[in-house]
Image 1 (spheres, rainbow, N blue to C red):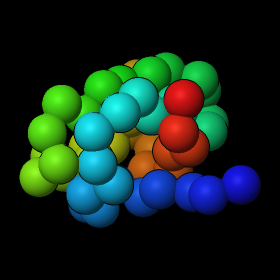
Image 2: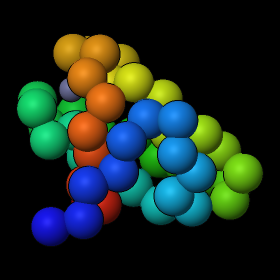
Image 3: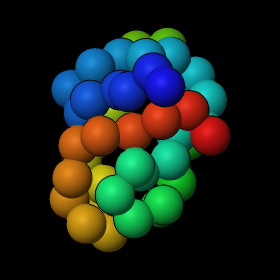
Length: 47
Ligand SMILES: [Zn+2]
């Protein structure tokens, strides 16, 4: 499984927090992946 960390710019798409399942969307290729809004962790997978 590919893991994306906050601070990366993984590209447009939906990302799901590995810890709690909260999802977020990046709408631009230059958007930086933020910490999870719910649990503040930094590990995501593509949703
Ligand atoms: Zn989370």
